[in-house]
Length: 79
Length: 252
Image 1 (cartoon, rainbow over the protein chains, first blue to last red):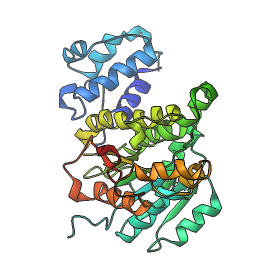
Image 2 (cartoon, rainbow over the protein chains, first blue to last red):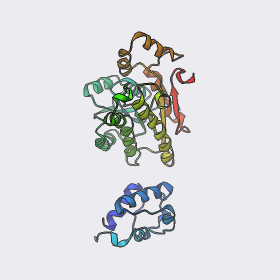
Image 3 (spheres, rainbow over the protein chains, first blue to last red):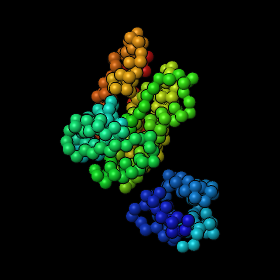
Image 4 (cartoon, rainbow over the protein chains, first blue to last red):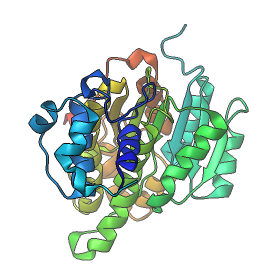
């Protein structure tokens, strides 16, 4: 999965409609970034990267790029 | 504006070709809803459609045990009739089999239709692109056998009980989207399905079942009216509940 594909999946699963999500997008500015949103992202990361992250991991993140780095930038295919 | 009306709402109903599902379709259309009917049998679907009030209704012939087809049903329904405001999962299979006659394949057939099909519909039709999330409402037809037991009903009870409890978690997951989720647990209602059940019993057993219902056996309209209430804005603060409609059966 490339970073772009991951962001597309993130947007689709969180049903983000009115914001263009970029690596620098601040997670706290997204309406969907609530406890349900965290639960969805934990599931997405586990399914796609076989990696367990916790809700407190997520709360510490600022941007979408932070999330990608938390997963591990090296795990994404190049564009 | 009548709070109990379904005027302007689009309701998708599974199991709409007979019994409770068919009556729900007819009653919803009479309450002003546009109805999308989903069931396996094309001829019986057409028969239901011919009984509906109004003309913007739409049918999809689909075997719900094909769980992978459900997203396409939701997609084509929204394309044809617009976003969905209400859902009734009335599709279900019933049987009376003691545990010695049951096996994993049979349990799975009960769960596929009674539970998983309803949950898969919920997964898709609660997406913003398919659903009007201002006051949407999902209703699952469970059964008093989802909370009570009877010999021969292990598979059926297990599946309906699963539904009653899945509804509670769904109510919590979807509350943020203003989507309400409830179940209805009817006692014995006269439908083609229960006629089959009665046909398999002797007269004394049949009478014994009727006698368990202080108000007698119910009708499909009794159940459909409760569905209309739960789908309507009159029920806008009701979510995560199981409404028992059984003529007093479970009060004993």
